[in-house]
Length: 111
Image (cartoon, rainbow, N blue to C red; front, side, top):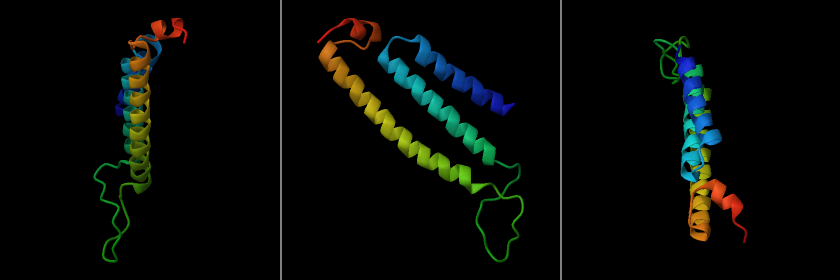
């Protein structure tokens, strides 16, 4: 059931990218897709009543949460933040040059 909610969140972000004409709304749609993928990766490694993935000689290795998706999500968050900063800086430069965030007006302008 919760995987379906990740898919719904992904579809909302995809809708924002494909339908909206405002550049800021498109960037927000990209961020929503990123967050849905992070949530999906975390849910893949989740186990009900799972323990933290800390190994010690006293504890047995059973019912531990998978640490690999957590590490992948942390890396993806850093990369996603860098991409988001780049997209926002490009949007600001486009606004400085054309005076609008509307992509249909930017496509019509020359120069």
